[in-house]
Amino acid sequence: MTNHFRSQLADGLVYAPGVWDGLTARIAEQSGFTALCASGFAISASLGLPDAEMYSMSENLDAVRRIRGASRLPVVADIDTGYGNAVNAARTARMFADAGVSAVFMEDQLAPKRCPAATSGAPTLLPAKEAAGKVRAVRDEVGDELVLIGRTDGIGDDAIRRAVAYVEAGAEMIMPISKGFPDAESWARLHAEVGVPLMCSLTAWTWTAEQFTSEVLREIGVGLALLPTQILLAATTATRASLERLSAGEPPADVSRDYMEHADFLKLIGFDEVLHKQSLYMPETLEEA
Picture 1 (cartoon, rainbow, N blue to C red):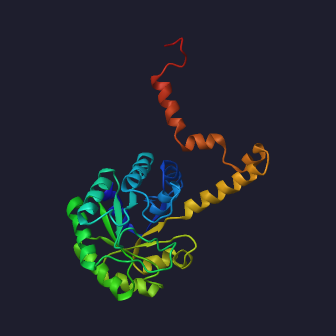
Picture 2 (picture 1 turned 45 degrees about the vertical axis):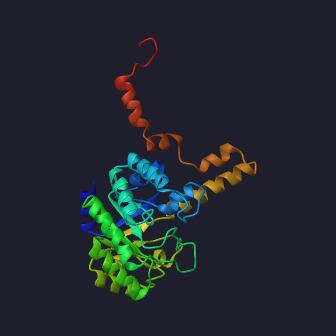
């Protein structure tokens, strides 16, 4: 699967929507996407938690396994800070590789992380040498089993120096944050300096999502574009609207007219295949048994 994902990246820009469970993975695959992002923001939200590294590595891994079990697509997993030092990060990467993901991205913040999409202050970063050591430890552990993406929350020249060090340590792609690189020109400069493709997070309601078209992304060296919150916000909006109508006393039959057909949902989650197997292997009635 990882080799297939590398082939996708070699062929051009890949979009990966943020999913958090088997259902959203199925929907994304059936909607035509060719890769998935196991979004840390969405996974933590599905647990009723903010994306502040409050959920454990095991909870993240459980979600990733459910995503992999429901879809045949390559999965890009968010492993936050690697859940510890270089030794911990290597074990984390090994467990995610064994779960079948095709890529992981790891950031250089000091744990517990601060989510740049939700906070205005600057995060505390690990010393560059220590962060590069974590990247090297992960690469040595998983070899070519995973596409390793190094994320830096640094700004300007410091971020470029860090990114170069992460590439030298084994990162195949670099993910900057939009606060550190506030326009297309700065992204293009980063790409020229590191010499590897970039990954960009097109988080909903951010300037990158508004300004970075597919054409711009290709021009500035982005090979992988994440859509980490779009599905989450769409699902939350629809769920809240439906529940508010029901709690206000609107008849359930009226509210459900805006839903997808029940038969279509059964097909989405795989009932056709189950019924087919039942017809092959199971008696139709107790009398036949």
